[in-house]
Length: 412
Image (cartoon, rainbow, N blue to C red):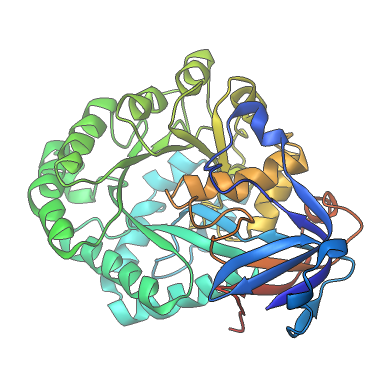
């Protein structure tokens, strides 16, 4: 496929650029009046229209006049395998109930766990497939999916097997994360060590035997898993080669971010609550700060300090946190808009955070996340747009006209 007359080819980073740190996020290379050649599912070549090679002129082409071409969004934090939405909690939020109060009333994660335990693997696969198709049509070309609504050995394995089926059924890179440490089941409310032992001694060996997960994750927060409990789980998972990701500092400054850095976590995610120690710990760290602004938007908690993290030379990514309780949307276009509107990121910073750095948070930035020769041809073509900033500016209305995955148009 040859795409010609591209108004702006966005994210033309050198292939060896695997992430962007601090002020590097300001640099979003754009090639104007460009062409792009895709072959065998990969980016074969690109350049200025004035330099279009004569050998390419006979290839059937797609005209992208007045349109922008972006690398696909890389959504590195989702929970899209779940049995049912939780709109009944929506009115509780409107009435002023907090996240903690809803959980205490039997809602929240335990509500989803109860429903998921009754669902079949086929039912979960079909519903997750619908969500994933919608996300792809909105420009997402790589995704991480967590378990965590099972909270039993059998149901956590069921979720991970569904994710494995999604990996086979969909044409995008998918990473699986074991998040059994998402909450304590009711029967272990007073026996935390009992549930941790279940994860370590029963679940982890089975996950490893079936090769069902790429990462381990823990919800390290007051009322959930303490620093000591989190460390215990991360150490056990390391024995099986599972790198950590951590739900960190969503509701309080807990020390979870610093713990993640100490354990060489691939990412620490949320970070709605930060202080100087958090910023200092992520400064120059290889651990990625993954921010989830649509969660803050939906449950009305503070927005992460993106500007402070960038000023402290951190690697910042944006992701959707798509889940039935706190972020019932996987629209990365809206996430990028919120990155600009609420996190005060520039459009260039937000796009970089949602593409190359999102890919880095899944350890796949060598193959997706930017426009570079040899990378997967996962990208989208916009409607006619006046400028790059128009995409986040026009929140709530999709500017995506066509999605291309592995060099072909995607039609769901």
